[in-house]
Image 1 (cartoon, rainbow, N blue to C red):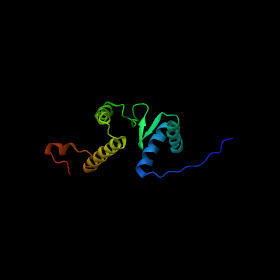
Image 2 (image 1 turned 180 degrees about the vertical axis):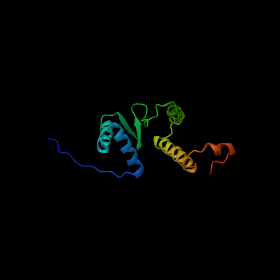
Image 3 (image 1 turned 60 degrees about the vertical axis):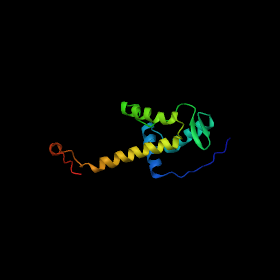
Image 4 (image 1 turned 30 degrees about the vertical axis):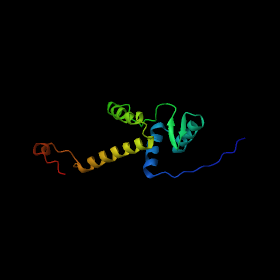
Length: 124
């Protein structure tokens, strides 16, 4: 019988939040998702190269990127992959885009008012 060991890691709140979203969507626990990632590395589905993840398949795509908008974003990011930019840089760029989008949304009024369009005053 194999002895199982507990291994822990520290995650940022953002990383944990994203893992929880994926876990809920897949009806799994965060621990099960992490175990899948470990198994993918062990089974050479994901390779490590100079401290970076290198996918045996193309790359991991986030949820909902199979929408037309998501596909456009991925095509743009694939240009960076072709130029051999590290995946962590590309993931950082994705986070920056999402953060910028969140900031823009937060600046808009809480409720849309069509009267504001006429005066070009969006209440910002």
